[in-house]
Length: 377
Image 1 (cartoon, rainbow, N blue to C red):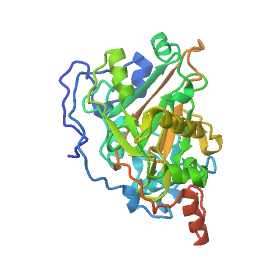
Image 2 (cartoon, one colour; image 1 turned 180 degrees about the vertical axis):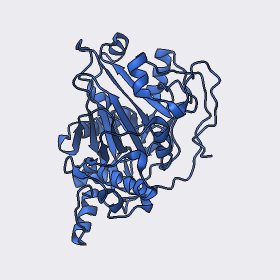
Image 3 (spheres, rainbow, N blue to C red; image 1 turned 45 degrees about the vertical axis):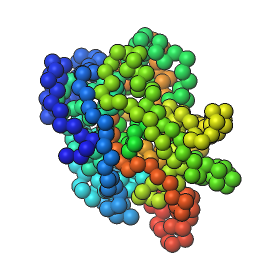
Image 4 (cartoon, helix red, strand yellow; image 1 turned 90 degrees about the horizontal axis):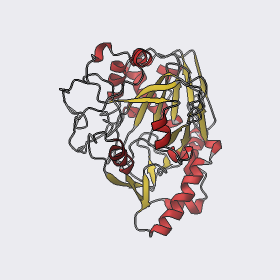
């Protein structure tokens, strides 16, 4: 059994449903808020050797591109949408090709997906051991602890009060970057939406690096920053929810390299990054604030996805940042934004001075005669 997955049978009354028949869309529409926070605790995560299935992909991505009804890039720098593919029917080769496509494009979108929670867990495990969220709500079902419930009611006063004073841009992050081996991919299915709003933004860490001047690139390469789980520790304290596993602090490179593409990506974000190692607080704050603003205002290397019911976004947390847009909150329009996330983990972030940038990599591929098919830019 992979070390990130704990074989725990929850002996609590809250876990009343069976994973095999779990229908979260039906559950939220019949019962409203259903997420639970059972007192199930897990040991610290142990290091493991990650083998990325993207290494097994066909560079031409034929298993996906040739079987889709439509494939198009949503923006030049990040985001591809695929129609006519069901994620619960992927072959092994299609799973591997998806890993490569997401590594290159940052985030890939699928609409009208029939995949259920159990199938989502099975798919997620193809890409790595699944992360159990330290403090977030889970479904009331046994063996569903690796599913993170996303459920926000538009006019929930407690939620509005808790996040009063926060800017939407404060939510930019890469999932659980404070772990020693953070998330590699993430699968998010949204099946219930408010009347309008609730989109999500993603930004490209590749292009964020490429848009820095050569002097800034040279400056940040080799630096390390501390990523902290203090947000989740504070959430547990403020809400009284159990902290299922200690949310640690870990040090990662400011510029990391993707193990499959070999491209450099900026890897700091406002939600979990706290300081640059070896800098004074004033120096660190100044550098990080510049980099945060660089990411958050980089509207030409961001993509905004308008959700439709049963759409899924698959993104690579190693080379993207994302932020939910809370534009539907507190308007008196009602509604719930609901879905769930499955989060495979990956390798420990690393930097390689010999690595290329995305632009360098694409330029070399073009010179070598790459086709430039949709979804490969």
